[in-house]
Picture 1 (spheres, rainbow, N blue to C red):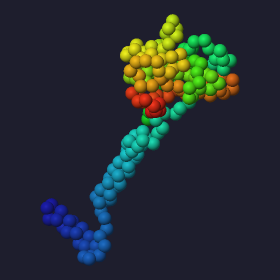
Picture 2: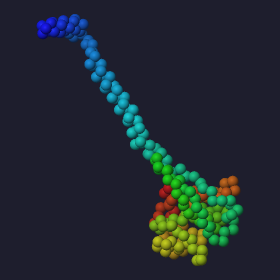
Picture 3: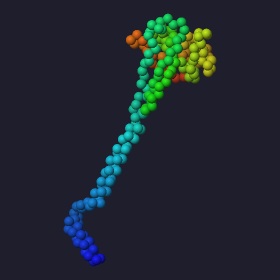
Length: 198
């Protein structure tokens, strides 16, 4: 039995030597084919899995941080004769990579002639330029008074007193189809000049 097995094996070895002479090209066997097939499959799966990972890594750098858009405050006829600042709320959408946040921000529509006004109307950000507190209007005093550090602003948003380095910031406005539109922006705090940061 053992000699028969040895004889079959040596016949196979002789046949293999005839088909693959020394120095000639070697033909891959079945095992080599499967090794190549597994390696190619692994490389393909690795490449397919790396595409979402690369996209996940690069997308926030290529995406716009914020897409500015205007919000309607109402017909322009409502703001021609303002006796006192009028509180309005605008919806602010902030896009950062995959995350989108929506917030309601109070603004004040008031009469004024500072830079950023249009036809004697200004829209003021309610964020204090000192440390970012929300500034409420005080109709009794006809002023804006910041509750954090007692900065006081005139009805048109200009600085009256307190630690704030500048007056309340005006927001960009325009008239479109008979409506007053505003674009909410964020400004750098603790500096004397208005500087948009977002």
